Length: 193
Image 1 (cartoon, rainbow, N blue to C red):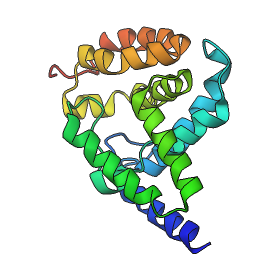
Image 2: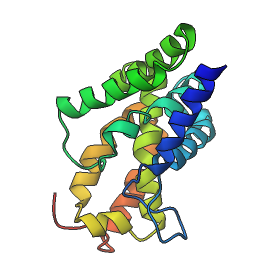
Image 3: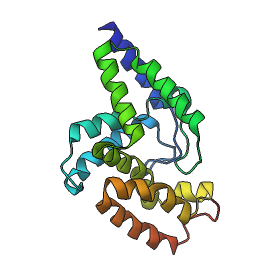
């Protein structure tokens, strides 16, 4: 029991990892725990639009563990270029954090994180679609807040989120591409990379 309590208390630190997207109606950036909760519900809501039947429980579990490495590694803006060092830092953090649990649970959560990271299964691709979509959906609902703040161009948004969303949930990408193109005309996007 103590191992589970230690794990859960360590996960509480995810609430302190600040992201670059604001929750609607709030004058602060969201944290990674809020993001994980919201994309898990987004994925559940999108399941009827998946290309094929998926294991929804597996998708939600992946989304609940996918960002726990940010407890040690911090968050990086989705539009930033990151390399293998960042990936290794997150993996090391995940191994440390899930390592607080007994072997069966530790192994299951690590396997889910690795599956999400590899993005080769239909469930992982669908989970990636939800993960990439949520910050953009919040930006679309808030006048492009973080795109303007960080000078993110329309082309950069489309190139970073388009492929994983289209691969994981084409119906969602069709919707988002139409919205993104419409907002381009409104000048929400920066001129930078």
